[in-house]
Image 1: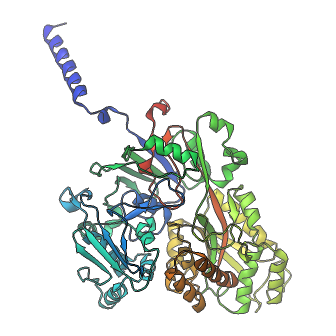
Image 2: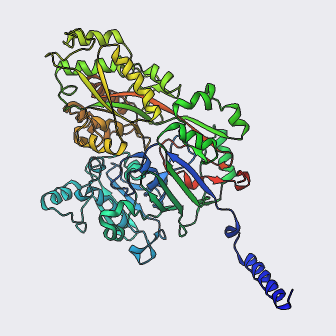
Image 3: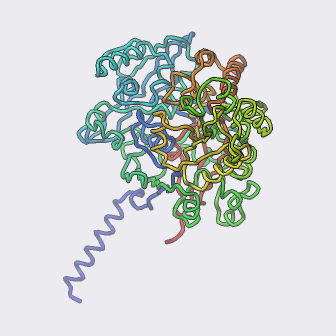
Length: 603
């Protein structure tokens, strides 16, 4: 071996040792990646435009609001995020003055010439104005109009009349008083306005430069202040996010419920650690439960969020982790979800819609014929409980002892209603006709996934039993959502989750001003609207609870919507996932979990 070769080898070794000495521990550590799958495809990443849960999970980890929720506090507790502190609130709950925390920056982007840019009060104003811009077509318009921000509706009406929204026009109800102070003035008291500012469904703060640069492609270019950034997106297939390298210093600091030992343990273990703790998140779209489950068992994913109901008997027999999974060191989190599954009847449809007695009778008969207990026990394998109304678990007005016709199964009463109002089988083919003798055929839009099929089979069996023909029309989620909002579907079913502990927002499903938004059924009732408006003004307490119950009675009587079940969510984590805890409202859990790379399976 030549001396020159030896010298080169020594030099290479010295260079390698020098690199190791200079490299940071983070550079040498194994990358921490969280991998899991969505059961439904995303629609995009502009917080002002999206409405679906799964897109919102992504944006909640990229964008931030003025406020958010403590990760471990139960019941849910609001905490400042972009805000420096809780708001200064006037005694009449009409003026909210908020300081923005200085030194928070948007992620570096070409819109800022490759750099970041500090967030100011003007960004808060701009972000909420975007929701009111007709060009944005935001599904959140009605919700924000309900808050009664002075001058908001007028600004939108001018844009609708003139064709262009004036972002530079100052309005009384929302102003940047200085660089770091934003003030909201409301037409009427709003005791829970802070929940709107914390709501992950309310969007997130965006920069005007980003919106103007990317224009119509803004759904593909999310630029926020949060802990993660979009790295890769293959629509309806794969989404990859990476740690935001310029994310400010945020430390784990949560207030666990002292009655929950697991939350106390997580708080003690994670306290003071810098967020986020993981480097990368990879999300796949797998709509069929069986492949999603098998991929998880094969260690391709680290988290199975919301175990599919049809797998519960295998994974959690008697609602306990199966011995084979426990032996592998897997963990389970099982909690009642702040949600419900529902189906609605289009009130403009000639067969199931309308307000005349025979139309109301048809919808109520269908509701009574549906066996919620059978759906929860069989189709959903015990991972749900029968819903009695529109108030979700973990919200302020929820009463577990409340009972109503919404949760009642009574086949005899259903048959009697149909007979009484002329829905008879006149030709003897086993199926009822309309009172005028025309065919009675219900068309229900649904998905092909196995868990949907099992629920649909229970519903069809229940309706067959009363002689009502049901046709299942298989489609895709994004198209169904668009068609539903356009009023093109007769009947559709989906799930709705609460993004705050406020019990009132779910009632927007019956509010006439939300038609085409939250109100997919397009139900309209003057008395209900009056009650809904009153509920928004009332502080939490027994009087508000009673008013919510009165509003529910109207929806139950007319039955434009059949609330079916409240789901029980079971999440299963691989042994190397640390610190996971499902929040009843928040979506941004990624930054609070860690991956123990020493426990990862060897490849």
